[in-house]
Amino acid sequence: MASHPGSPELAVFCDFDGTFSVQDVGSTLARIHAADRQPRAWARYESGELTAWDYNLEVLDRLPLPERELDVFLHTVELDPGARALLTWCERSGVPFRILSDGFDYNLDRLQEIHGVQFDYEANRLRYGDGRWQIAVGFPDPECGCGTGTCKASRIREYRNEHPGVRVVHIGNGRVSDLCGALAADTIFAKDSLATALEAREVAYRSFTTLHDVTAGLEEMLR
Image 1 (cartoon, rainbow, N blue to C red):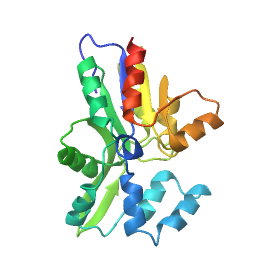
Image 2: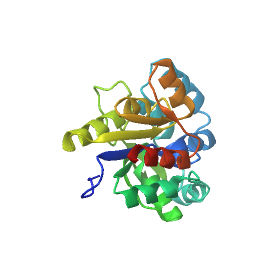
Image 3: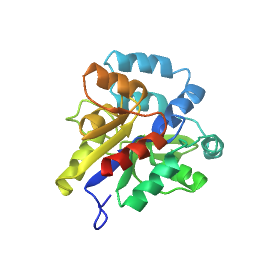
Image 4: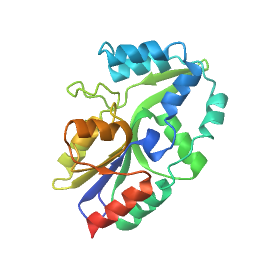
């Protein structure tokens, strides 16, 4: 994600599952296709026995989900009502926008095709072998406590190093993969469990219901 010439020193990083999209793709698929493994794996994650990525490996790696069946499901995934407007506003305002996701590149590529949208992103990797998922980390950071396959804080820090003085915005909804990214940002838009986690840490954030609220907040920031 590169700054546009003459753009304000603002960059927007946005979670995908439950933020840019209504549904959480990975969690929904796990409930449907890995219901025998998910509850026990989640309990082990909550106890600290598994990292977030270890949880993904336990539940989603080797998932027997044919591509055709996955595609049928992806056609049911809705974007947030304000997702397109946010993309349009960032483009028109010259503000760099990037999705940071602890989900998978395969799904993000297909969802862009299905919905006719385009965005830069960083995410984990998903390939197919014998009709089963084969997953791999995207951008892990062993030094961060998030334990995810794509550490959002490290991606934001790398962007800051390349663009000194930039004002970073992070948009998210979950405490597992979004918290470290939010804490690395200058301005946070949060809802759901991310908002609860930030309140527990007494970290200021701007609440939102849909991404229309975020676009209005960004417009206010530029004014």
